[in-house]
Image (cartoon, rainbow, N blue to C red; front, side, top):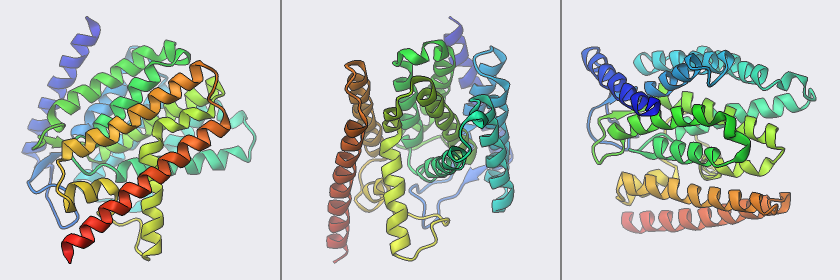
Length: 317
């Protein structure tokens, strides 16, 4: 019953936030780089840090992780209202990742390993944020990842935390997974969720000793990394907003439904995760297997991307 109560609590919090956002005009206006065409309330993803705070109050997660996510959420929410410079955002990310390192006792690891993990975490948080562009994609992908973590025996003790964050996704998804979304996650939602997923990925890998679980984030990771390479090749500023991700090509230039594209991304990730869980259970998730799955995904992604680009060029001609 406590989880049912939590779900309705999260719905009420969202509705209260909508009143505040509407009063203070916290909205997302479409521009030439947007994937939406109507004014929409921004920052509905505030329910994710609310979820982690709730989990902390119930003792499901440490104060360090709660503080880390609340910190990036506050800075990101301010940035949603009034754009900030890179410095305060980057500083918040550094402190937050430091708190993640503290919680996972990573400072006791080999010193050369820390910069690598730090760069990967920074990259992941920003990649996840950049991928938040169409209705449903962030929340469906996050829900699939959280659900996948929940099926691992190693995370049995963390189920209350995962359920709580899953419920926050359900509450946000009720207002976002629509043809015309009531609200967008905003930086406050995408960055706080990215930090949570990054933290839990590190936690799972460290406790299980299985690096293969990195595949739980592979669909977003591949799209983000390849898109960055494409933009660098075109000599574009990778820090500026753009419409170069495959999902943006599919939703914007080719006209596929936002929900269909979001389901495609989360559905493919779900299939990958099911395969990973199965291979681990039969003790077949070796390094070679992980690399093979990753290479197959990259080739499949490039094939789909090239077909999409050719269709777009053909339409323009």
